[in-house]
Image (cartoon, rainbow, N blue to C red; front, side, top):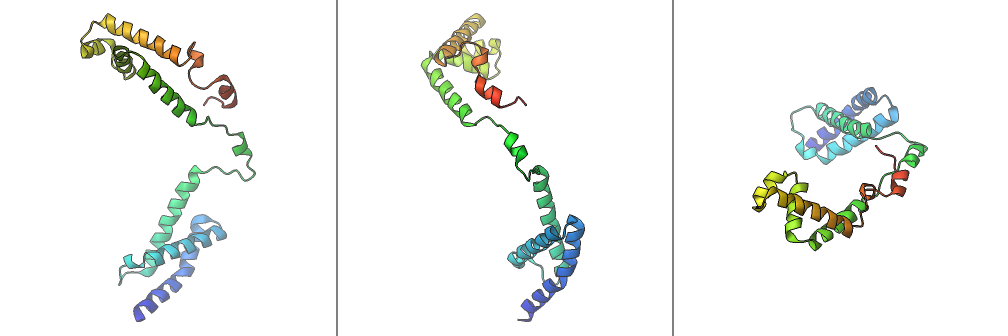
Length: 179
């Protein structure tokens, strides 16, 4: 029982020092109290990791400091917006459009001849025409022709008339400002 009493006494003795340290870190009494409480909860939850014979106060200070830095890094990425005006101005394109477009492209690729599909995928993958011709065992002109036919076939299957039809539509472009 004396071991648990020593732990309890060590924690109680450390609280005022932890609170003073937390106030100096945060500059806010309420945030400091929350930080001390979180450090104590974490300390008690990890009491099995405390090395007997070492300083309970130093151990709790380390937990508090680490907790402060974790919260600081998280807060640094957050934007203060108490009245919601900033959030109301945010507009983000829906992510499902890209998924649907990719599925449509995949289906359209399966509808074109294998030779054209192979050529356009090599070109889209960054392989130059010379290397693509070597990979496919054909002349460079044949690869260029296959890529061109594949692009036209895909554009037709995806209802793409010109470059403006690729990506977000007019309404989405008007709603979501370019970044």
